[in-house]
Image 1 (cartoon, rainbow, N blue to C red):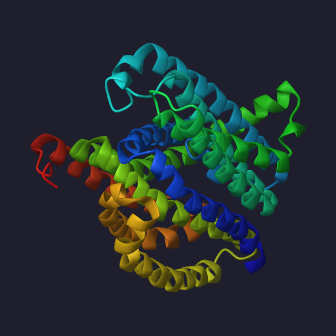
Image 2: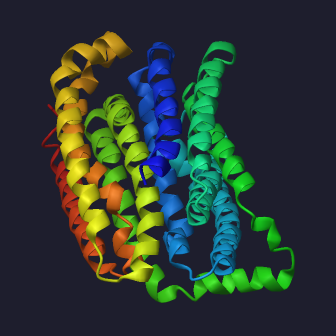
Length: 385
């Protein structure tokens, strides 16, 4: 198990180190306000990704045969392509004026960038689950490194050579390029081109819809999770404008992205190993319990260091204009301590066909955030914060 985790985590570590080293350069070209525009765009696209896939990709690991896993993967990709095309039409003909009067007024080509981002994030995410089913863990590390390369080169290249009126566009294009590179790496390791006939393509789409009973719970759970993650961006934007959202977004980039990356690296291996153990013994929960106990020990030490050193490290790393991100870094570190443990074992419940407790916990978290957002938006109670 440690060997499998190292195959994923080594690549993830290199990718995160590259992004960390690039941050002092990126934050000298992009200010908190520009990061805020990018954060609002990302929040909207990640919510759309959840709608587009329905989180059905989580069920790939539960398929009884490789053919079924392959068919489910292809079915999700086809549906994602169709939904992304529809999103582009809706943005172009129904939402463009509204979006242009909001925080995204400085972003050009929204009707192209938004569906393209949704398509490649969702596709890379889906193929990652299928590659995990195949046990090709080295693909995760390679994809992470190329994702970081795409983000760094496009983001910095746009700011240095193509600096125009829409500087947040560089951040969006960097994100999109990173996901495109990840998609092609996972595509190389997957054998989805086995499905060449229309008949098998139809079977693939039908297989997705055959999961309807599970999709409803998965979609509610995933939407609640995604909204819980993205609403704080919109909440901070409502209180402090895009500048506040930019500081919050940078804090998340420093703390949440490594947490998400390494937590899911462990989770990918746990998902693969536990699915085999569960097939042999439905009562065996030794693996997830062991992972939880070890993860808690590691995270308490590491995130305590982040909280203690934030006051000195953030201005040195990002520049004085980013001091507003310090309290966000410290608060997010407390939350991400628990999230790391969750990411490590989150799909154990799916493999055990136990969806409800995750759904209701995510819904409860989401409802509390929505209430907070409504109170803040209606009363302006935190405008002095």
